[in-house]
Structure formats: C-alpha cells, structure tokens
Length: 533
Image (cartoon, rainbow, N blue to C red; front, side, top):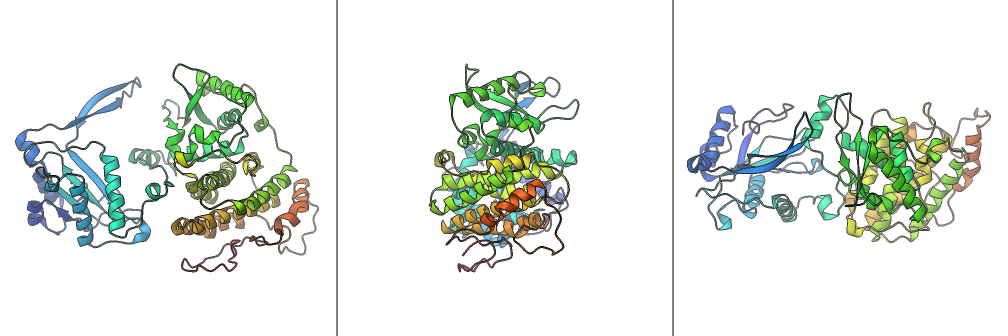
C-alpha cells in the first residue's frame, strides 16, 4: 500500500486513490487522494483478519545461495494477492466507475468475495495514473485471510486470472490480449531483469539481446551444428539439455551472455526467449538427415563439457567470407519466395509463421552485424517475429520446396561493417520489404486488422529508417554523375536488377517500396507504396 500510494519508482504516480474495495475501507477513504498515513491505515485494515486470527500464510520458494550457487527451499510470507490490470497504451483511459466495476468482477470471479459462497477477503483497487509507457491501469490488493480466519485458495491463480481477464475484455469492449486470442504474444520481461539492465547501464534486457542472437544464428544456419557454432562466434554461451539418461539425444538448450569477471551467467531456455525459438521449432526449418543430426550432436557434446571453452568439432562455412556473387542468387531466392506466397492460404498460419521467422531472422542478423545498440533493424526484427509466435500445436515443418531467407541472413551475419551499406543490401532490403508486406496482407485478409496495422506502422517508421541509410537501388532515380566503376559485388547485383525491380505480369509488387502513412480506415486496394493493390 505504501508503494501504491507513493510517488512510484520514476515519480510517475499521480492522484493515487481507491476505485473499489472492501465496503468499510471505501466508506472511510472513498475516492480521496491517498497519502502515506492513509496507505498505512488501509494496510492495517486489510491485515486485520490475519492478525486477529493469528493465521500464517506462506509458500515455498527456491533460493540460490550467492556464495555456492546451490539451491535450497525456504518458506516466505504469502498473505497478500497483488494483481495489476492494464490497458494497451493505444486504448486511452477508463473512468473510475468503469475500473471499479472491472475490479469488482475480477475479485468476484477469482473467489475472493462472498460471491464464492465463502467469507469475504478484504481488498482494494488503487489507481495512480498512467505507467511510464502510457498504460492506464489499476492495482488490486487482496488479503488472503478471510473474515472468518480461513485461507483463500490461490491454486492455478495465474491461469484463472488470465481467463477472467479475457472474459472482461469481451464484456467491456476492450482490446483482446494477442498472446491469448491469437497466440502471438511476446514473452514477458520480469522486473528483476529490467532492474538489472538499468543497474548495469544497458539499453536492453539480456533476454531481448539473446533472442536476437539466437534468431539470427538459427535462420543463417543450414543445420543444427552450424547453429551451435554461430552462437559461439556471436559470443553467446550455449549448453544442451540431453534427454533423460542419454548423451546422444538433445531435447533442448539454454543460452547466456558472458558475465563480467567474477559474475555468474544467467541462463535462458530457448522457449523462455520466444515461443518459436524452442529446439523442436528451430528444427522445423532445417533439413533432417542422419548426417546432420550426428554432426549436431557432436557440437552439442563439445559445448556441454565446458560452454566457456567450447571449440567447434567441425568448423563450417561460418568461418569463411561468402562470395559476393551470392547476393544476386539469394536476392532472386527472396523474389521466388514472394511469388510462392501468392498460393499460400491466409489460414495456413504455420507457413506464414515460417515466413515471419525467416524475415525477422534476416533483420536480426543484419542488426547483429552493424548495430552496436538496438536500432531500427533490431526493432524491425522484433516486430516481425511476433507473427511467428504461434502455438506449438499449430506449427508444422516448413514446406520442402518453399524458398528461404536463410542465405540472406548468412550474408548479413558475415557482411562488411562500416560505410553506408551496399547496393546489394539495398536490393535485398527491398525484397525483405515485399515479404513483410505479404505478411501484413495475410494478417489483414485473416481478419487480424490490429496486427496488420502494427506491421504497417513498422514499415512506415523502422523500415523506412533502414532504407534511408542505404544507397539508391539501380533502376531507381540516381544522380547523373554516377559513372564510377562498379565493384564486383555491385556489378553482380546490377545484373539482377531487372528481375528484382520488374515482377512478372499480374504481380501485386511495384517497382519500388516507398513507405508512407496510410489511414487505418482505408480498406481500398489502391496501390499504396507498400506493394499492396
């Protein structure tokens, strides 16, 4: 209560007041602005049943010893249930009355009030303005000792609370949570992760940096062994999780950033980073053969012995500079993939998820190579990746004959750093833009207007920022004085320009991609500069 009625960690709290709660507490404090004294009075009132009946409510937690690193179990106090309910920043704000109604329905359906047929728990809902990210929200605090001294059950409360929130979204006309409605939500960031990043002066949490590294390495690799080696080259610690009783069957993996001297690494499983980065999901994008499977096991075994001192068993193409002629080849592959997508039904979420994952991986690889801190490339990769976060049961292996962005991701990971970029990169960017537009249109056709608009916003802002950093594409308007001799790489892509800039008859892709703002209410199919007709 002291925190909820206080100034906040960033002095963001304003007009701290109650919007709902126990009738006696509301009669005493109503909707008045709370101060420290009032907060303590409310806390004592909430705690009265626990103190009066001398009830102890605890739960077991696993705690790591800071010296030895060993885990042990301790029981800690757990007599308060605290939940925040937040709107998306785009939804604006609700009235106190509406928030009060929502809070009351939440505690009723969670079984904390007399609506459960049991004695009521004391509770309050506090509103203290917008969050630092602009989200209107409230906090619900419940004492888990009922008025008769019995304990309220919290079994499976995370899932039950989410289910109740989905009901409340529908009943009150609020925007549904994507992770529940369409299975495309990102993994949440824990407060401890944010605090550690701020404390260490980093611009992003470890999980986001690792997600980008894993995504880039996975898409740039042609098999599992190369994936392990590429992560090692990126400076990431990686270790396998073998199947029970086996050392030749890898069931999963975890990764960590190298800690500062004297520090301990913080490990993240692939599924903790993103839903589409589990090892089974990554394997859907690689060819399956006994040879590649054994080569992958060999690399996993090598890194399992000592992740800090891992040395590749069989170094591969990641050790060599790619031939500049490959830019032309892989650019054409992207163009072929774009044509293949015309025949993919919008209901085929698995195939579209593969497209999103590979396109995001290409941008992630580019970001890894040229962005010292996360910039528009990293942001573009993160936005596109959200379309790959489908549920496991919806996923299936990538069609064998479908094109791929793997080659482009490989080139980006090993491209030269510095300067304004190359014409080859500008051409590839245009092709990646076309894939992004195809993905955006698929979401729109499937009725997911919100996701389509999010991708459109990404094209207008992040994608355009990347495009401005690259030289003009041959075939577009160029300065007349450009008569210098082309490099081997530029000459290679110049030969491919005709095919990339002039799609076949009937193609909905224009000669250029020039992102611009588009009204969200405009549902016409006029050419809009993004390649849609």
